[in-house]
Image (cartoon, rainbow over all chains, first blue to last red; front, side, top):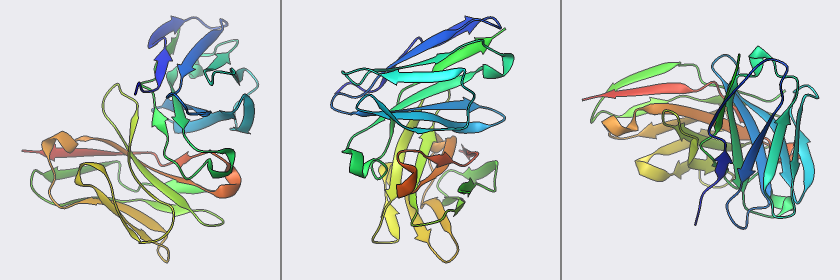
Length: 117
Length: 114
């Protein structure tokens, strides 16, 4: 079974640009979460989607947005990039129904490393 | 507010010795606790979880963790460390009313020397 796939793996942008990151979950997983990892702030929750609906959202500005498609693939977008947005963005998928979302383990992709210059 | 603390930024052990990576948590409600490991330039890999039941949880690669409700701790242990265990370890907590959101600790760098 293929794991969680994130694209692109590495990208470089300049301040003010926008970026879109893609995530394909494990087949059959309907929940997709996004996390930001930085040396200073550690791992921080961005948002979670289940069956195309945002279920939960972290404390990030509105420049960070996401969506999920009917095939469970997800994208996140960051607009008007700032230097502080440089980070490893991790996507994770989870099996289970909406009533048991948080007892199953997350399966993480290898991340998209974004550098903002 | 929910939080997770990993009091040690780094843990050094000799190969063959037992290892412990500490984790304490603060939540309202029953906690769901997880340990993940991250190797350089990779995503996180699941090691084990505590949801309910036996306080001693066994996981992947010989790791185990003990849930202690009175001390609000969930320390990760392994009886005999391997050099290949060297990595970054994260403890995380979730609660039912937070949906799928995990709160992670800051991580502990484990270094196992031959």
